[in-house]
Length: 139
Image (cartoon, rainbow, N blue to C red; front, side, top):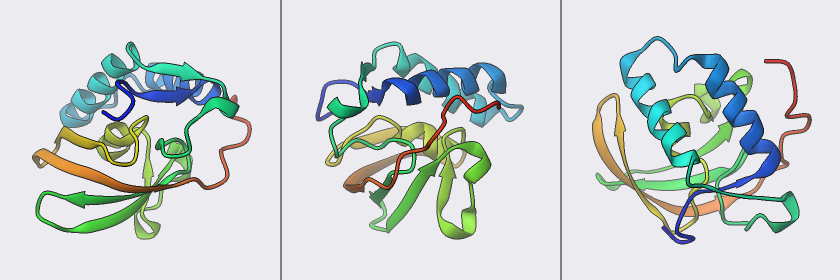
């Protein structure tokens, strides 16, 4: 890991903890495993103010270009659950891929257990879009 641990912006961290608690880790066993792993990683995460967030960290609304172990390159946008849209490559933070990416930096390699098995992926580029407004929305 580029920074030694996950890095999350303070309001996004609070929102993420809230939706993880409310979600009950979902019904699907593979999704449960992914969200439980994320919950464990959050215990060691660095929590920082927005103005101190490094620009190369994947956060809410970030677009991340990834290279998978099979050589396929894909760009995904990490979004809050209500904004997910597979057709537009918008991945929910509660999906296994979203849980795998949050808080990691450009250049990091991630090993994660997805529903289709364990995969290695490299984050080759992170682009920040406008951050989510009003993260204290009612879920």
